[in-house]
Image 1 (cartoon, one colour):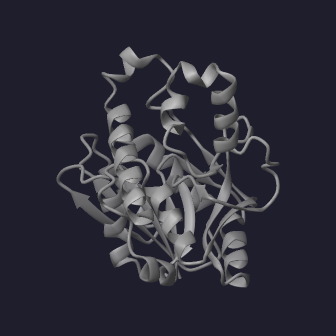
Image 2 (image 1 turned 90 degrees about the vertical axis):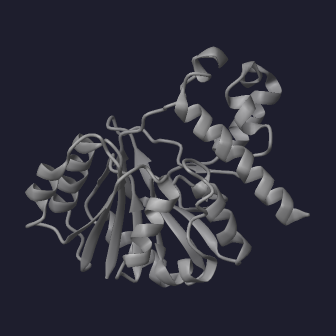
Amino acid sequence: MLSIIIVNYNSTCALKDCLKSIVEKKPEQTFEIIIIDNGSKMTFGNVIKEFEKLLNIRLILNRKNLGYAKAVNQGIRIARGEYILIINPDILITNEAIEKMIDFLDKNEKIGVIAPQLLNFDNSIQYSCFRFPRFLTPFIRRSFLKNTSFGKREIQRYLMIDFDHRVIKEVDWVLGAAMMTKKSVIEKIGLLDERFFLYFEDVDLCRRIHCQGLKIIYFPESKFFHQYTRHSADKGWFSFLFNKYFWFHTISCIKYFQKWQKIKS
């Protein structure tokens, strides 16, 4: 059985499109959908009513936003499936994408996480697999340093620009917008680290999986569409100061490097 976990926060329209894609490209595997609403101000009851007769939906309603990692963990705890697919509500699945990932996962017991290729709606490829960030990487991406030769080399390293994104590859980490694992892997390494309210929980999870000798696989044989929105776009430092997502990212970044520096020590 497959458990599809979706965390919703004020994403009613995107969630509707996501569920519609699951109905249209319904996996062959028996599956359930666990939707965790993180205290949305937008009502989405009509969306659930529209799909609850077509899909096996289980719903968790949080009174407030508990953070992404904590919400995903709520879903994992009640998941009945052997396989767990975590997706954002702005994901659209495609034909046989889920089946291909499950098949590849089953044939390779050393895989901890497998992730599809993410596409923009114009079919261009999104960067969704990465090398682990260095301490200065986030700062470089948001400062004038990104235009220096050093900064450009670091961004190219981090984004794996040297890599052909059309081939299957073992990578450091994959974007948490769409990733599949087995419940047995989660039982081995633990749930997502709830210290990360938003951002870096996926980097941390993949790093912990590596520490257990398991692999992170970027799998472009499966493709999902992703309506990607940059909450912290390149608008300069002054704009960042008033962007709550920038602060979520910064705080999680600090927590991530503090955690892994202690582990190294």
